[in-house]
Length: 490
Image 1 (cartoon, one colour):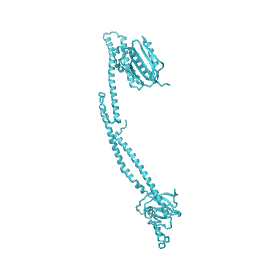
Image 2 (cartoon, one colour):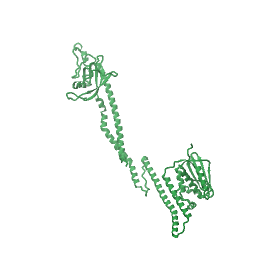
Image 3 (cartoon, helix red, strand yellow):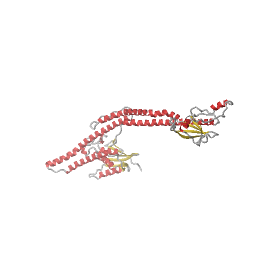
Image 4 (cartoon, one colour):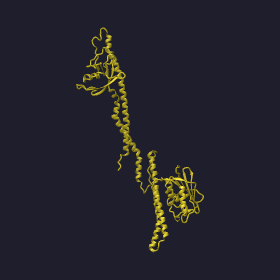
């Protein structure tokens, strides 16, 4: 059994929600990545600039270390306030302008000894024993980078970067050989992407739910005409096929679906009507030979007389022909369109006409006019049956002459014309003669041996082979024309 599917509205809402989540979420993640990368790049450029400036400022004999407070100290003798007060003031301010501005850095000499630390690096040196490599990393374009893990304080105090791996930007101090380590704080990048993170946590689910609700509503509104069509189709039965589904005036796919459904219902109604007529006509046609055979049997039983073999043969032959035609029509309707091999329709016409000349009594009224082979693609048996029915129809009504013409009037078309010199077909009945069990007038009745199925079968075969069969204009008698696609030339 097929696995049950979710309703269309549910699937539409789910698909819309998934698409919204992928598009909005993916866009937000991409935007977050761009913002974070740009912020990190900006922080890196700032840290490199600050490291270079600190290296230039620290490259003086006045700079010393007080790691406990992260402050700058001047050793005795480095600056004499009485002799040179301006220089001392200069040293205290200008030589170390970054002191107290909230940036985190450290200065390490060429042996890995800490000379100066400030802010977060001073805190983690003091509280958690942060150390720096004895050999600084190799610089890339004057700057280097090293990743360190900032462990929590041994005293249990809470630090800003406890347990986090951070990046330190390095810059070498010349000519002393010391190295400046500048903390590349991730806080600025995290603050830059914080609005996007809030959107991902709060806004994205709301947006996805909103899109799903809109898709649910839109799908329900779009499917409302379909539901009305379904209700109308449920009321249509084989006994009453007069109802039609409502056609929306929107001009969209659902409106075209309604038009197609109504056209299909029209075809089904027409097919059902033709089927009813066919069954009724077939039953009526079968009654006559069956009634005749029963009368013969009743007379023989009642009066004890002998049965006339000729009358019995005629009735059974008529019944057999009618049964064969009905079976052929059923098979033509049930099987797929004809596919076959090249068939020389001119040779088939010559063969069928030749058979009639050898009948008893021979039929010498037929003349075949063909300029040469005329090939069509199809089933030889069906094409022979089509031609045989046309010849049989002409033989019933012709007086002295029947002309069968096979020609190629234009590229890709083979035309077969069967013209007789009989009473002809009235203009108003030229289509009706191709209906099943159709008889036009008194000249075309059962006395001529037909049940009105020959031309209907011939037209079905022509259509199945991609052609057509029609009654054409003529000044004398009837002219039936079959046009078939020509076989490709090799």
